[in-house]
Length: 271
Length: 306
Picture 1 (tube, chains in turn green, cyan):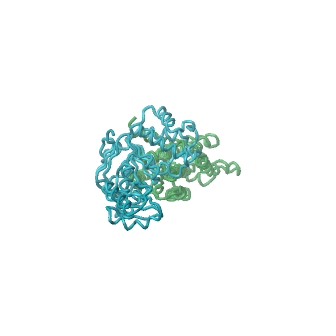
Picture 2: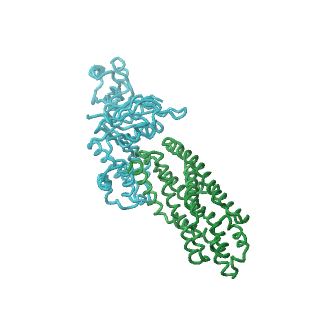
Picture 3: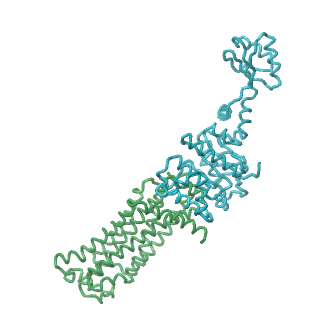
């Protein structure tokens, strides 16, 4: 293994061990996955069953029928399934909050934890480069956030397979869904990570860094609410443009992160 | 004395408009313990950080284990140096073994598990290997931090206040350990405020106050301060004989009851001074040179620089 990757993997392994030793970090993350999935099941499964009203009779069905031209996959479903699949797609956008919150809380803890333990100077006295330090500090939270996102996907998939309308679970494998989970999720997670790392260098309280989440969560929530209220759904081209914007933002944030993670800056200015 | 493992030449470091270290030139040999003494803010930690390639000098050269410090060689220098930082900085949720294994991996130590076991045995923490670092006493945490500095078997070890805040037994253990590092042939630099410890441990002592004020063996530093101070004990009140002294090549430093504390220009003037006192009628009971303590020497150096 290349020396740099060996060093990164040593630090990532350490961070995973440390995170694993803190149920106070893991349990809220799991609760968040379940909590953020609940509104979707409430709207799509539980309420129709409790009230006896089918989604086929709701206004969502009309919008789903209209959306068939832009989302051809809907045509294979019955009207209730079309409505359920359309609303599910809205909630998938909302579930991007999972990797954002996961990254923010874990990355802030990973950096601020080292500051609080006064462990940065001994770390910097090893051959570890500062870029390796930044990558290592991002990788454990990134990997765990991706696991959380996968868990969120699993909850939707399992829930829809068990309680959804016929064939709706298959819509989770539409290109749009895969783009959300496979590209936008990781990108927005990296954005959150770099922001958390940069802010963590300036503060000594993980909560302060985590509050930054608002800057990312608000646009996602706004998009979710806007889509739901306006009954539109961002199509593949719009999502690709969003992904491109995130790539550019991430390049800039990573550049800023590397600049903040300089040995002398860390030793002399990080307080 | 064997080969030189650290050499600095004209080493300086400036932070904005503050000069932290100025024109520092010193060397450390393999198997030597050099203590850095100096008041707070004298530049000791900054010097250590430059030697550990954590900070780059503003000017001057650093050579560690035959490698000159440059931006390109900093990683290599760091693999030659073991640094004990002022705070242990352990990952308290992890075990002692996990702490050390991570550092062994960061340094690319071959057979890391075996090396970690060996270094834990060296510093006497092998029986605590699987305890969480956070559960250890301050003294044991310091031992773990020292083990961490040694895990990659560096030829140069920098110890920043290694016994600060430790109880006497743990401080003794650390001092014994430093002695073993010397006998293993490592070059050891110790920063401390404990002068007795510095005197006990060190082959040489460097007194720093931004610039290097002195660097010599503890004995020579004391002798330089002693500078020919002689105590003469006489029967009765010594003050009556003080008028005799200016006629000799000596001067009165103080009179303490039956003791005259005198400064002589050279030890060869002592017999003449004693003879003059006897001729004047003094009954001398004792004549002895007075050694300055290391503290006297240190304070004199630092105060003269102030």
